[in-house]
Every structure is written in C-alpha cells, then in structure tokens.
Image (cartoon, rainbow, N blue to C red; front, side, top):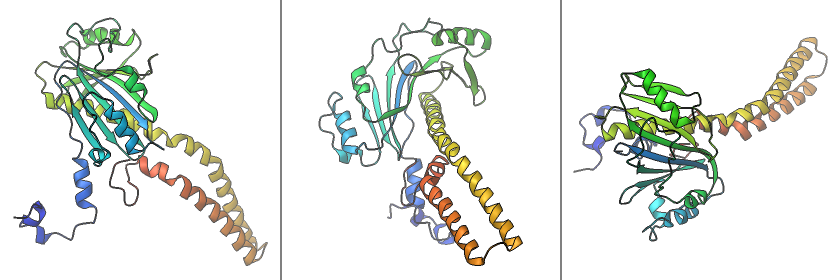
Length: 301
C-alpha cells in the first residue's frame, strides 16, 4: 500500500494535480509540533539573526550540551531538533533569517505567583555562558514563566503578577475564552530578557500549555522581525516621493509636447530603472515578513 494518503484516497482522482510545493509546505506547517509542558514551568527563549552563521556552527554549539558530543550537521538537516534531558528540554529551530533556542525547565518549588521580582535563573539548567555563546545576534530573548492561578479574581491576580515585573505597569490579556492570562510589560530588563507570565488554571493540560507558550513566543518574535522592515520603509520613502514627482513632471512634458519622444523615453527608462533597482534590493524584506517564502525555499521566514 502506498504511504501517500492522497494516492490511497478515493477523492484523489477528483482533485486537480498537486502544486509542486503542496506536500512540502503542508509538512512544514506540522514539522514543529508544540511541546508538552508541565506546570509550573520556565521557558528561556533566545532568537538570533543567523546571517553568516552556518549550520555547522550551530551544531557545534549544541554539542556543548551534556551528552550531545555525537551530534552532526545531518541531525539538523530538517531545521528542527528537540533534545531531551533528565529534567529539561532544549529545542533548536532554524529559519531563513533567524534561529531560535527554547529551554524548558521546571520552576523551583519555592517560586510562587506574588513573589517580589523572583530570580528566574537562580538554578539554571543551561549555564549562562552557553547562552552567551550562541552564534548570531540577539533579536529576541524572553523568560516566560507559566504558573497556576485563580482566574476568577482579575484584580488580585494582576496585583500579584506585577511583583514579577518590578512593580512596573503591565499589559494583560485573556487568551481564548479566558482559559489563561498572559501578562508582560514589553520591557527589556538589565539581563537582556523580556519577561512574560502565563497564569492558567491547575487543570490545564500539558498540551495546551505548550500551544499557548509557543504562540506567545512566535508572536513576539515575528513582531520584532516584521519591524525590521520599518527602517527600510523610512529609507525608501523620500526616493518614492521623488519618483512620484518625476513621473508627474514627465506626464506634464508629454501633455505640453515640450520635448521629443526620445528624450521622454530616456527619462522614463532611467526612472523605471531606479525604481526597479530599489525594488529588487528591498522587496524581500517586505515579502518575507508577510510570511511569503522565497522562490524554492520551503521553510518559513
């Protein structure tokens, strides 16, 4: 029997021929399953720009973890790897422009909601030196704690949650139909990390905790990656204004017949070439962060 479910399906003959990238893109969506996370937990998350960083360098970094000396670049070929240790996991994911590392560990038993500025890394499972040696340039770094709490008293919940953020103002949101709360301050602390806090009922499944935390981390990462197009947009603004004014002038000269067709054509071609050059240099920055992959690239941006 074929291993292709589409080939075995009775509906397959009724469908148009598959797009060349259909299967690879479908599998890509499901290639990074969310983890099962047991409460209470801490996720230390670092996303780095990987321009100039090879897969071999990232493999060498992962080999520095206990018992991973035998890792090879081939183990990283699918752009996703989850390493399981006795009490924690390390997840590696490589994307087109960035690579992210997620360390999931249990929170210390004495850490509770309402603690004053808890030291999240009092007992880190991954040495800070290992995190500092990750190849690349940091674009996002987050300490995300997940705790149990009573969601019925929102005011009391927020008052206790603020202690995790040095008493600063926080932004809180109910997720889904109120199954969990997410609290953050969008502030980079002195240690370089943002902090997020997820509060969820005691009966929340490990699968749901994994999905919730994965979505929050992805939202923050892609928010920052999308904003990388903002400086480019500001840079292109004056050029586009000049091009618009030049096109208006060319149109006016055509109406007034103030110059020859050959001269107008030369001017128009020069303007079009300038715009085309800027488009070719910068279009990737915008299309990538809209979620559109480059031609021939089946991985997410």
